[in-house]
Image 1 (spheres, rainbow, N blue to C red):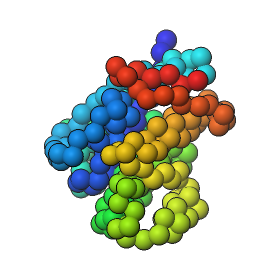
Image 2: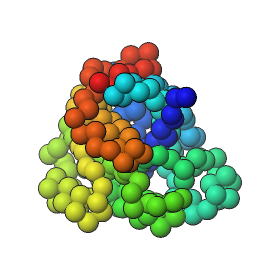
Image 3: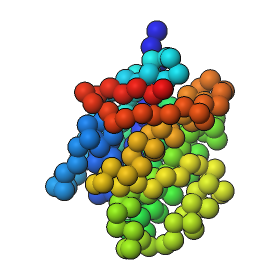
Amino acid sequence: MVETLSIAVIGGPGVGKTSIIRQFLYNDFTEVYTPTSSRYVYRPSVILNGNMYDLKIMDVPPMSSFPASTSQEWVDLRCRGVRNASAYILVYNICCVGSFEYVKMIRQQIVEHRVGNSSEIPILVVGSKRDLQRQRFTPRRAVSVLVKKTWKCGYVECSAKYNWHITLLFKELLCSTVAHGLKHNYSSIRLQGALHRNRCNIM
């Protein structure tokens, strides 16, 4: 039986969530900004260490807060399924301090309201639009130290426009997610090549 790993991609308006996902899956990027108004689910498959996994990548539109209960989650269609996700990608724009404050709020709410033991749920904080490095609101190191040392989360910066670190961020998250599920360390796993036809191989 193929295991399904559910990944919720969450962030404020215009931070590049959809662009990151589509660059990862299709090597596709557009300059045209189309706001995500409803939850969209992508379902690629991966082969990891000889085992196949189905991914359920949820592109979650901006929500006012992480659902505190199952009933709240089901009332708001935008966030359906996020409480039971296997892992979270929290995206902010490195040029917008407000988008980082949003991620800070959502991460804290995940810790408070997540189903099960939230302290061990893989959370990867992603600084997007790295190509606009000169406009960033604070040095990378300051954010990295806060996220890694205080929040105990992974941290990656990327650029969907130039396909920089897109593959790396999904590799980081998938390795953490599988390691969390199997209580094993898969740090040697390598993600090879871009994805085509909504499938990928992880050797």
